[in-house]
Length: 426
Image (cartoon, rainbow, N blue to C red; front, side):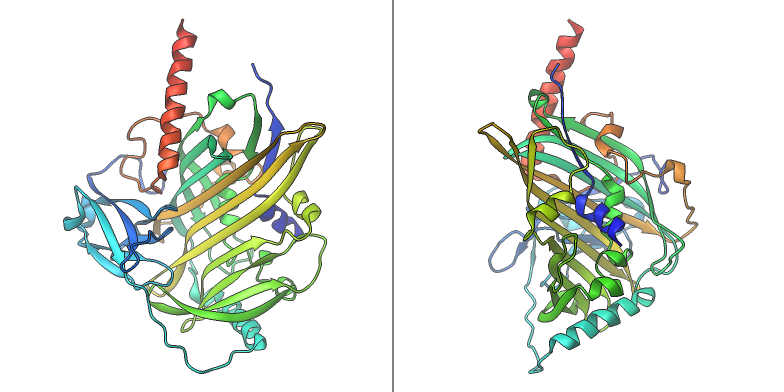
């Protein structure tokens, strides 16, 4: 368990000082229409981050960004009539595909009101509830191999400045849940990146593991992280709320560490379907009460004299129910830390974000690609990417719409890149 937790906790971050000086779903773009919009609360008009947007009757979809914005590419061959928007605590709502084209739509959704029964749920019930959900994993999640297409993005920020942005479409072989002899695999289909050239002589933050680590965040598939018997014994569980997810009532089970171990544990929430006893969402953060233990989880390499101090590490995993089974939908990791240099006055704050959204899935004619083609958890994704940002790079494939700050950073990177290319030709 320790080895797997290290991979998850670190998200394989490598810090070093730089010296200044084929797809399972096809490659060719098909005719499609694009729907762009934003998801908002119908009463407060607040934007709703990370909402799920799916074409009704298919496995095609995407996830809104942290500002509630999304773009959804709909193949004309699907003959889709509507798409569905869902969000934690809200009623699912359908929207017309034809009426949402050629304009930015505002998708208002209604908060779900819950009338709780006057039943007191004790902490002992909460532990039993989690154990029941674990025992039902084989029944509730895909029990046959699946091929998935996903969009992956990672970026590094120094304070408010973006240092690097890397993105990819990846193909995933998703092994059956509950299988102890078959593992998930991911390979890069196409990818691009951008770097802040003007800050190339500063501390370089590199992320090890990339999209393969996003699969490790699938806690239901990798129960050693939180859901093994040994892990469950390390936590105190309590049912603290009930919420609606995908028009299904879910218990909110909060968990906190109850023991002290040589490595840090987590504080978070499990969302468990009241009817199916399936885990539909997990949010958790690393316990930073022992800073030394937390620091050891992240660093693989750093320059002499650098003091690394993590300030937060938060994770999110969501699942989508389709035809009675739950499938991985979205994973996100956000790590914040501070770097100080001995005998120097200045300090820098950094943020590293990784996210991956499944945009299509199939259980037909699934072929497990060879291990040599898979992206390894020891590899550095940004070092494998060579294409720079350009125009319509993704074609008919769905992606996570970039936030405005990311769009601005990409424009800046492109200007720097063009200037650098012009100078090299002189």
